[in-house]
Length: 87
Length: 364
Image (cartoon, rainbow over all chains, first blue to last red; front, side, top):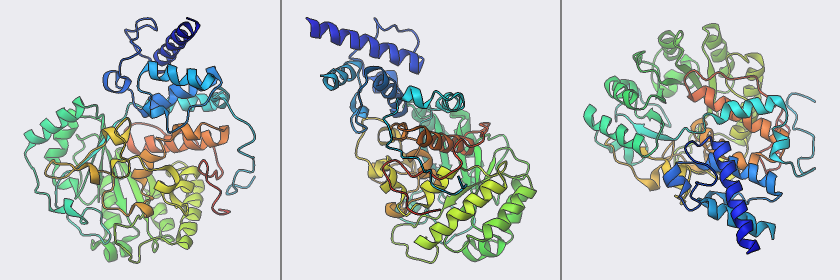
């Protein structure tokens, strides 16, 4: 239960960073579908993803591997990656 | 610290947070200014298979693309641009063989996608209504141009055609043999209020001729670039980090891992996913797709390649304030060279910083 709750918190926070950094409109952290494909359906590119990754690194005190972050194309995948790095 | 010395700080001294790196107001402002253009998604288009000159070492007349049959139908081009827009392309590079031969097609492209660049030899004026950046290739003084490009009074003609044109960026390509001529050419351009940037001759596949750079010519070129950057800061669009990246002993691919499809099998995100190079017949081939096809990748130091490849490596440059400043200078330079109306600021890092993870290759 704690794990599920923690992951949900991370998902909400990743969504918040994504919305703020990329200035996304018409979506809130709570309504942001964590499984939507950020590349195909939101249209974000590698520079956007790198920007978000840099901010998340700071906030969670972890590091994304440069080879990994381009593959993290949904909010859920990003949240799972952060969770794994924090363990 | 000397202007040409490598930064003496130890770049491994601590693990920097990104928020710390951008805490300097000047850096933050530059970051915010440049990141507004992260929406640019480029592809490249050969507009015709004709040119009004024939240069030694020309990329267009290498490989199969030169034999593509021209499609001169404006409706086909308009349809292509519409479909490109739909798949997210926001920036077009109109190149080979010589785009000024087909002004109507250039106009068709401009009507659909208003951000872009035309790479031309500058001998024929491109109508002002086509408000793309215009890159005019310069390979030396008139004597050298006549020898390599078989065109008389080339620089004089280029300047006459474009000296009062805000679209124009003169691109001086350093070969092994024209390095010292750049001082004379730069002076002439500056006297005519022209702006210039630098390119490096990067050998086409199989080319072993006299234009190909050597270790000695790379050192010599870097010195000339830095001297002119210092002498004409208002006219020369460049930075110390540009000089490092483009005159390093290692080519761009070895330094930054080229992300164009030709060398990048990944289609997850970025250039490997979105970039296409259309031939004059409007077909494209992923295996060949890069900004300067038929270049020997190991020798590639081309300015167009660097503009995408170095810029795309935000993540690996965001590790230290000095490295990030150098990268911001590079991005600021890239935008000023490629985007109409973008004004370059003074460089933030006026010394030589090695690419991330790479030892300094030499003292200057």
